[in-house]
Amino acid sequence: MTALPDEEPPLPPPPLIVRARYELARFGWSWIALGAALLFTAIASGSAAELDSAELTLIVVLIGLSLGCVLGALLLARRTGPEILYYRILDRAPPPPPVPRERSGATTRRVIPPAIGIVIGLLAAGLIGAGMMLVLGGQPRDEIGDDLAGGTLLTAAAWTLACGAAGLRMASYFAHWERMRSAEVFCRPLKAGTMRPVYWVERG
Picture (spheres, rainbow, N blue to C red):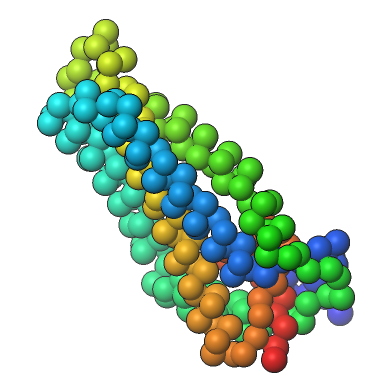
């Protein structure tokens, strides 16, 4: 029987599965902690104090525009809220395969390296974004170096905290669905939060 074009092929059994809500929550809290550390570093090192009011305004505009564009794209791309879209996927999910399940402590240790990797990427993007914003704001190129550290740290801190809030928000979607259905949602490692049929559901 030929599969319909919109049907997903069955997932091969993985060597290990993880509870999706746990992975999302671990990522969320890791990013909250890392974002707070970046913010503390910006303040404690004095690099944030190097920014005058005009430069700080430029950095705030950069953060607001970048986060606003992401949220706007999500709202324009989907009329249905993400919570409902996740619920539709989970309601059709098959039962989990008979494979080992990762312990919560192992999940915490596993997500820390990729969470740090994302923050490093955000620091690099923040460096570029802050530099471009300061140039567009009329800052002389030979003076940008004095303000770049503070702008980079503040931008990356805001983006990292936003990632943490998003991870915790998605974890709350899964937790709410699990309470409603008396079920547990599992997935492959590093697949939690994917808005595709990559989940297995164990119903109570």
